[in-house]
Length: 381
Image (cartoon, rainbow, N blue to C red; front, side, top):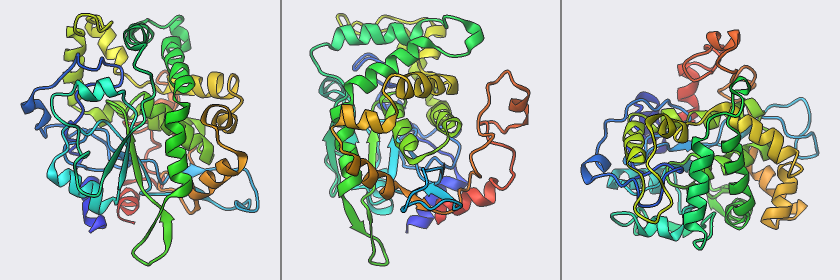
């Protein structure tokens, strides 16, 4: 049953590595051996929002976060709202998914369609077919963010963005990451449109016979950058506070767990000749695989708001969606209820503030109603 499968995530944080490279790695530069792919030694992933899907790293639910949608006939003021649970999932690539993982994905989570944001070259350069493309009842839909023809130049530019030091260390964020995320957003419109349309149109029947949005999974390589930008846009559309979105983005490093060290080692080896992917120093590799909350905060403020005019304007201009489409997507993702994470205040603070000392290891306020008991309720409820 779904409850038992998800309870395993609340009781065990085994996030078995599945992807062969992080989003910031070259397509064929960082292959893992079969023994690494079958390893189940990653036990650091926090839970929730992480869900145990055997053989898949960084798998988590975008549901349960506190929302503040603009008051309307759909969202009366003075009520509490959250993102719909067990509907929109994100992860690293599914290359190492096991039979048990496929069962969790298909039967427990009821995912029928998986949206793959990688390029066809990335997929083809894997050492074996990407699951669950051949799994019964699951369709893998390739929706690449980037075109193939600018592959080498793009990777070279991307690596520079991810490895350049901060322009001003006192600012606490990487302008290179912000540039990279702008580039993702500018190119991802058609890919993201397909996922928005899934949310808008597709339904399944729940156990009680009522209709609800059909669950979906989207991923790239490590589930950090192309995946992270789309996740941020989804949460922003729903009215999730920016500091919560930044926290959700930042926990990717915990989601990768001990597999993160393997990624860094592969990055330090560099890409194949002609790939445009140079070998990195350890410091550069750690930056590239990082997910600082400040990078996402600046992206939301300086790019999504100031340059694109907000998430709704982005969806209209880049994803060819109408105002009615956008309203439908929001209404299908936002439901009334209390968040197990509280109201979203105090989620994340810069590491050099005194408030950070009062947080748990992931930046969550210590307990205050968001402790283990409530975490288990969201996973099983």
